Image (cartoon, rainbow over all chains, first blue to last red; front, side, top):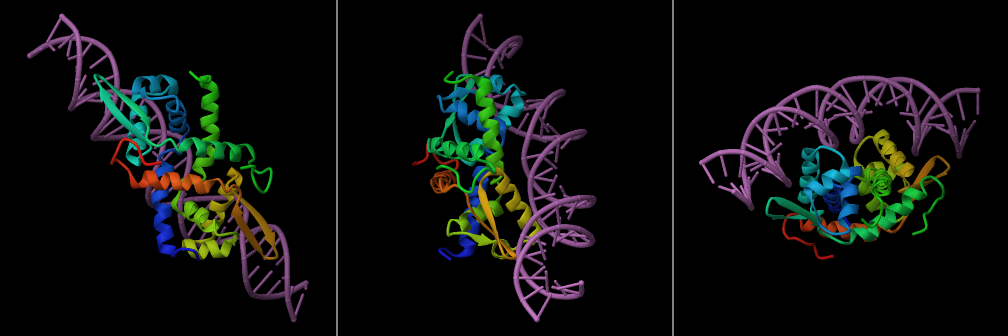
Length: 108
Length: 108
DNA sequence: CGCATACTTGGCAAATATGCCAAATAGCGG
DNA sequence: CCGCTATTTGGCATATTTGCCAAGTATGCG
């Protein structure tokens, strides 16, 4: 064992709080859209096509997890990606999504 | 808009099927353990400390999503990481997990 | 064949997540 | 201060996920 099991369990648990916060199509759409730059809640709401209260709750979860950062300017709240390293990750899961059940190892 | 919205929604949806499959502490523990190399179901069960039927179902979901690959040898089934690009991702979410709510941008 | 071991599947109760409505809060213009 | 717009919060019904038990399948061994 490279590392003690209890330590690895704690690591996995911490990671899951972040991963859970993006494990939803709408939330991943927000991350994808925010790669272009910050957007306000109303813009994201229009893109998602669901209730603004639902959007607000999604964003709150993502912010709490550390995925997004927000800034209030006037009446609007602008959200942005807190950590650009996701770009690389999305490339990775796109490969996985396209190779589901087809071969032993994907092409990454 | 860099890309059409419907296309981006489809992308987000595809990604969510992969992300959901790892959005659980036990599943992320498996990925962490499997970074050391393949393990059989009974080894993973002992590490996770839960029922073997639960473990088997977790593994089935992860395999279907393309995260893991499996090989049966004799009585045992060995699982392994299908795509090593996760290592980079874990580094990314570890940074996020450690900077939750503390600053606008994490250090990645 | 018969039995043991390793794993998977079906089914169900309990826990958790989702999404809308109604209501509350915050900032701006007059 | 008042009304308007943007967003958040509380609450609740519905949907999904989780995890165990019981039962089934698969493989090796004598």
